[in-house]
Image (spheres, rainbow, N blue to C red):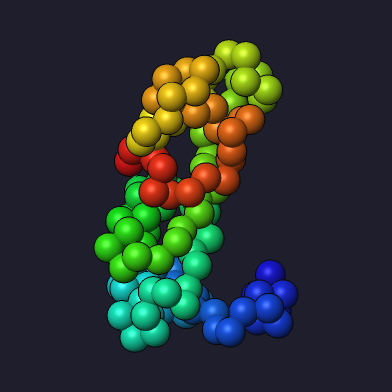
Length: 117
């Protein structure tokens, strides 16, 4: 999807663990540099990937004041909210399940600031 992203985004930065594409290492260092350089008000982050990486990016986004949405990957047994097996804890939500939201029906994409990482 690199070509597709390149046609739609102002710029694309690639990082890989082994350096086989783009910069070798985690996405966090280039992200912090980009947000500091451009100013977070101009960026909106859309994140998918491993939970620890999304947690780190969410913290960077919060520190910089950049809006950030994460695509959660949680095991979903039923897929339509009955089993409540895919819940994540969130801040200040008092819905049917208290401080928990169901990824399968309330997500899977959520504002990273809502999640209690």
